[in-house]
Length: 370
Image (cartoon, rainbow, N blue to C red; front, side, top):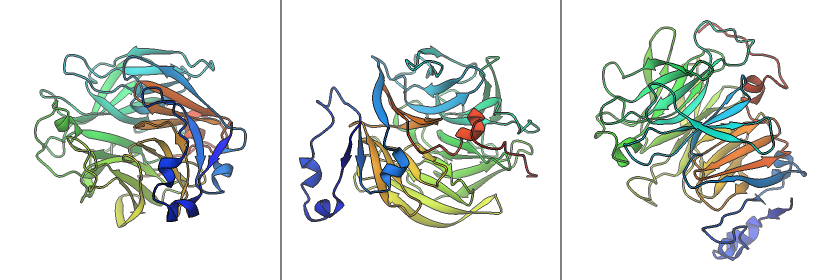
C-alpha cells in the first residue's frame, strides 16, 4: 500500500496546503483508509509492507471504545457507542482467528454503560500468565453510580472494584490502565455521561485517580483538566500520558483543549511535572497507546495520530472520520470509528501491552511489591 508523503515545509508556508491534498475518502458518507507520513521516521514505525483495509461497516456503532484482548478466545472486546437509556451499551467481540475478523454482540452482568477498559490481573494473580480478567469503566446512569467493574468473559461474571471516591459519586469514568508492576489501576473521570443526558450533574472536579485493588486506597493524582480522557504509560513506566478532550462538550468548542499532557511518575504512585506533549490538529485525542519504542498513538478526529517521544508528529492512519480508540495485536493495529472497524496489517510497531496480553515476543512480567 502506498503512503502519502506530507510536506511539512509546504504546509508551513501555505495555509491551504492540507485542504488541497487529495483525500483518501470518496465522500464523507463513504470514508476510506490511507497512510500518511509527516516525517521520515514514520516508515520505520508503520513498515514498508503495511496494508490497510476496512473490515466492517455496520448500521450501528459497534466499535467505539476499550478494545481489550482475551487470550482464551483470541478476541478483542470493544464497547459500542451510547444511543439511548432503553438499552445498555453492548460489547462487540471480534475474533482474531480469521482474517475476516468475525464478530458478535454480548453484554456482561452489572455493566450498564461501559466505556474504556484494560486487561486485569486481580491481586495475587500469577503474572507469568496472560491477564485473566478485564476492567471496564462503567459510566453509570441516572440510577447507578459510575464505577470500575472487573469482568471474567470466560465465566460471564463481574465484580465491582470501586464505586465511589470515599463515598462521593464519580461523574463518568472514562478510561483505565493497570500499572504492569504494582497492579494499581489509574483512571480518568470526565463529564460525558452528563453531556449525553444519562448521568446527573457532576459534583466533583474532573480528575485522574490511582486505585489499589488490594488495599482499597484511592487517591486523586492530577487535576486542572477540562475533560480528562485517555491515559497510557510509557514503555519504561516513567511517564503517564493523559489526553484532555475539553474541545468536545455538548458540542465542539475549538478554543478548549484537544491536548495530550505528559507527567513524570514518582515512586510509581504520584504524578509531577505536567507539560504539554502534543495537540491534535483534527478533532481531539481520545484513546491512547504507546508502542514499545515509546511512540504515542492517539485516536483523533480523522484516524490515528502517531507522535515520537519528543512529541513530533510522525504520521497518521487516516480514515477521514472520528476514531475514539484502537487496539494493537501482533503485527497489526485495529482502528475503531464507531460503525466501522479498520485494520492495518504487517506493521513494524508493536503495542506496549501486546507481549503481555498475547504472550508473544517478550518475557513475562513479574509482580513487584506494591
